[in-house]
Image 1 (cartoon, rainbow, N blue to C red):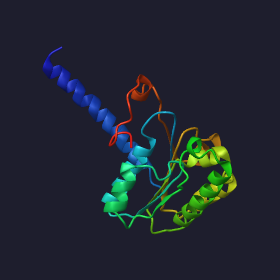
Image 2 (cartoon, rainbow, N blue to C red):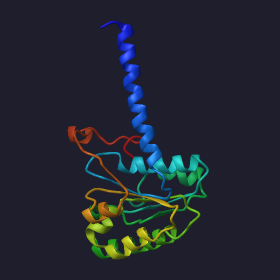
Image 3 (spheres, rainbow, N blue to C red):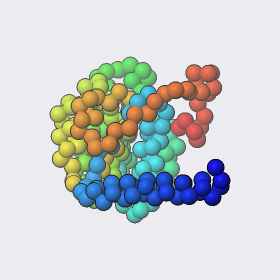
Image 4 (cartoon, one colour):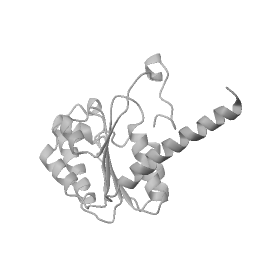
Length: 202
């Protein structure tokens, strides 16, 4: 096939694709905030959530963050946002990973305190985006009731979007979400004995 014919076929294929995309864009007429769930065993869920926060701030909107599970350990995204964007509400559960605390009562109390902060953010109509990092664990362990969490998510301001991250998102959470992305784990350097790297893993 000549280069000219290949170029012409490509042009026609792209014209067809553009028509399909344009039609889908035209059909998307509802404007409101969305609930996004980023789950799965793969790396990158929190990174994606924080990236979207930066995107939101870049457009001049306001965002808020509650970080569950990971606690006060070193976190580049948190350091950057707290130092460079002090106007962003940023709350930390504080107790850290469950295998570090080994104290269920302490974890429940810390989760409840963090969730109270999340509820305030989910009532704030000045926030364009709220990131609830690792919230799936709070649901999985039953530290805060599903009813309470879902009520806050479903009754937030109409224009507010929310991102929930964490492994093992429940079917019920996926059902109320507008967008669900499953991050798979095909290969990870840690399993090959390579240490987690500052500025990449955290």
